[in-house]
Length: 179
Image (cartoon, rainbow, N blue to C red):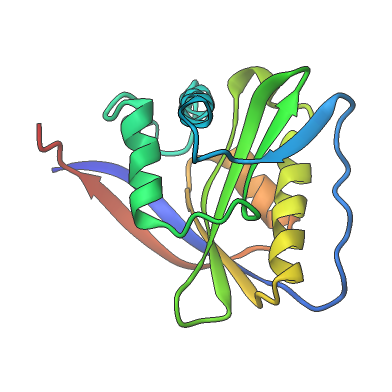
């Protein structure tokens, strides 16, 4: 087993104040993730791979699974709700993705994946997508949102801190390849 990362676990309450509209950069549009068609799978798999380019979030995971295996893992372990799985398109290209899933038996949800393609970083997509995702959950009556983040990922931690998340726990994650 080798050390993967120190993960911080974060939480944010979702008060019932009404949604604040996300402020999207010029040329951005959003769609629900298409997980039904082969084309949708291919697009989402390619976007997941693009978000791992030069990632600071558990970079040791990059290349351990194919993009298709990564997507299949998310599909197998999380409730797929097109209203809570969102892709951002910028200049006609898939640029970012947010996947949220309700936590069974609670009024909470988890941000199970959030990533911006390397070429699209620094253009305001991350804050807008996070606000959009929070708004969708508030609309559903979700009371809190949880996530885990590599504590070496300073840009993501800055994004989450600015969005009102606070750390609730810290763990050291290890990995062991089975192949």
